[in-house]
Image (tube, rainbow, N blue to C red):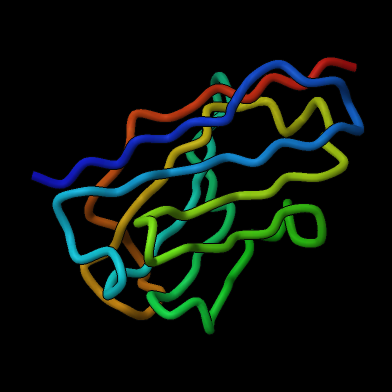
Length: 121
């Protein structure tokens, strides 16, 4: 059974930083592309970032590029999302997702429960 467990969210002031983590189990992590999405209240889920299994390919959503960095540690079965210069509009539940493929796909097959990020102005 695949499990994705996010952590690292919280309440932070605008301009601050956070590092989100997602630990995966029940899958061969090193052969799976991973991604982060977010969903703000009343909004659709939004793509944030993705990384291929080797880490050689990274993609970012239009709204977040430049402030967000996705990375992974295959030895720890963990994918990270570093968020800098946080803005109130970054407030959302952040979800980790795993693909069945090594390359970054169009859709993802497994999802975590999410971690709340709240940015105060």
